[in-house]
Length: 147
Ligand SMILES: [Zn+2]
Image 1 (cartoon, rainbow, N blue to C red):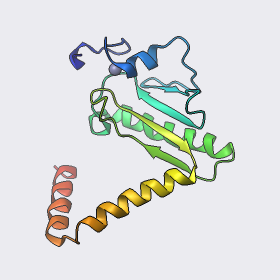
Image 2 (image 1 turned 90 degrees about the vertical axis):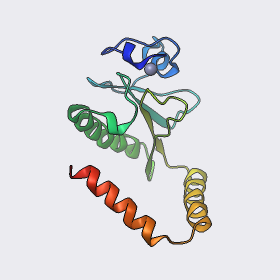
Image 3 (image 1 turned 120 degrees about the horizontal axis):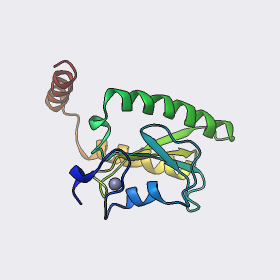
């Protein structure tokens, strides 16, 4: 699969996110200029948000795409909250689909929250506080944001 083959709205052979986006049976709640949503019968408590173009991750979005995604996240999380979900979770991993950004909004499910928090705490527990690493990280992020 070559991400250079991707145009505005054409599927790229071999990409299962493209297959999802272009599936004629895809159940969508809203599509926008840059993003297509999907709800799977396997996950009837979550909405996947898929970039229509191949993008490596959030960092690769244009200003227009990022603005649209921000508005979409607020609207979709409001809609999920209105279904009775106390909280709305966001997740984007993408390790298996590194060229096609997608993320999911999920209605609250306590085991997921507990597992995610535990993974965070486990990672923190396995490494002692690292002031020098914190300084390096802060400097690197600030440099990226302000250059
Ligand atoms: Zn794709």
